[in-house]
Length: 450
Image (cartoon, rainbow, N blue to C red; front, side):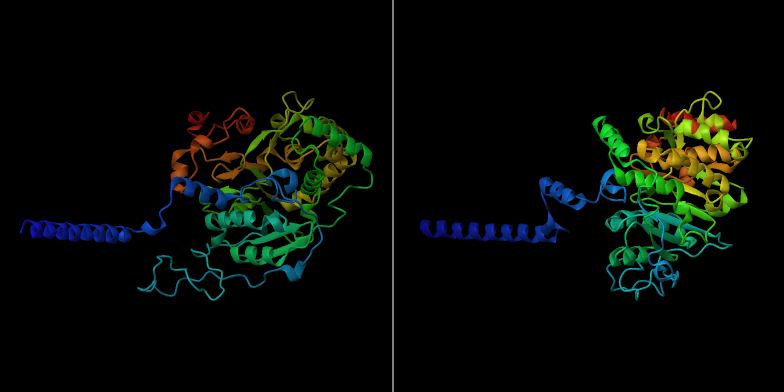
């Protein structure tokens, strides 16, 4: 009898154990995502594989081999010109009905859209300016520039549908064209750069230029040994605005790969520029590397002496020089963001300025950048009232951030930038100098960001 009782206990214990095991097994499978749980090590490995090769690093733009995507390379002759125009401008269409009850996604635009490029929101009312975005990029930049396009479209252009002109020193491939066309709300146009504008001019001493690059390489000057970076800087300084695809436009907004716009742009900056009689604008300013432009100001002073008729009376010399023009303080507007007037760049004054600098050879005998060239030209040949600082256009390009100063501004514009990252009031920024030149008060709250 005792033996029977013992066996019964064993059977009962085994039954309870099976029930417990079954319950644990069932409940774990009911936990959302339980079958996809990973260790912390696996997650880190996954994150690394996701980001590998997609950061804003050195091989993205035409200057990419050397420019960390800081700028993009291109020059002027239409590749596809009219044939490269996405003439069927995608229409903003609303979702025809609420999502089906069977849909697992709350996104009303998910699923098949019949090939249409649909972006949220309705076109803003009012006239459009004769304006375009312009981007210099290579085919390998496609995913980096896609990020930028999405930023610009989501924060601004889905309501305005402005064109986009892409320039390259080679033919754009089908992937680049199809991806960028699908992301934009306006026409897309693709042009090839003329080798005359993307190469060494005949008057450059190649041996001298080579020795300069070798010397800069030894001194570890950033992009000092790069040929493509120099071609890009010269092109951006003197030729992009002459490209046949851009000749029909009056205004441009320059967009680089891997930028970020942190806030909504709730108005048309092109129209603001035109209505306010502005011709050049910026969001970030800083000091240039001294080693890259040792004789740039000497060339500028030569131009001023040769063409005094191009120097306007109410200029911004105070922003550029601390001693009335004798020396250059190296302040410049960071040109990877620009909204400006193409007619000004095509003017005799600006073209004379570029030609003078170009003949002096500093793009190749040193490493003159397009940012100080544009900035000095604007500072000398535009009335200071024609240059605008966009505090409300929040912008990032590695490694600097412009986050609007003013908490209410950031809240109103749905900004997601951290004001602690704002570069404007950093000691290496020249933006405070711009306010002092205009004798205007600093934006409210700036002192908290110093």
